Length: 199
Image (cartoon, rainbow, N blue to C red; front, side):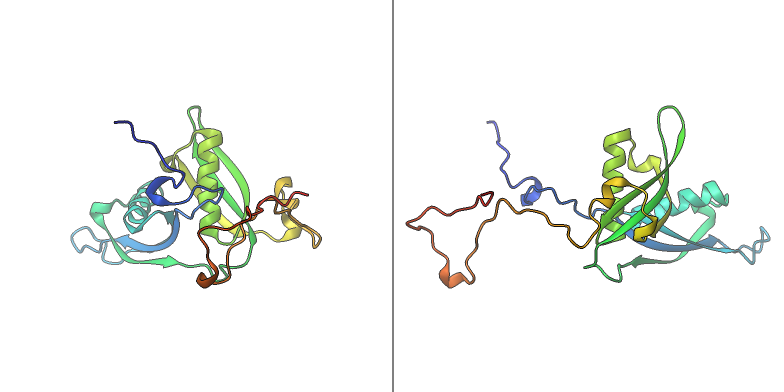
């Protein structure tokens, strides 16, 4: 039997142009495990902000960067604390700048990208989708160096500047009018509903 995919998409979620936040920001604190035998009784403590789908991947990425930057691997180290970092104003749109580097088939490349969204997690999720589509780069090949909120006068990308200004308006050509309450909901109506508002 051939199964047909419905318009609901995967796991019953509606298909739309919205990029759902897949990655979260974690603050991971770790160090080299103190050992009297190796003479590491006092070890430096390192703190990193890492974007990952969950805590397990965040810990894995933390030890990846620790082994590359500080020559401390998971077998000889310990994680002291891991916390998820939440957005202070999740209902406010801002422009987020992301400094990152990725590995391609030919070499290593540094890149700066800008995204407008309501949280840095959603902006990073857009960045991973964008880099995967444009440069065929996977999550393991992308390294985020820095993220910051970019003020209006420091924005570089032209596609984000189109949304600036007080007179920016976007047409809503297709709208489905919903009843105000469940009491006014009807299964059958005498007049076909109007959803096209282009005229």
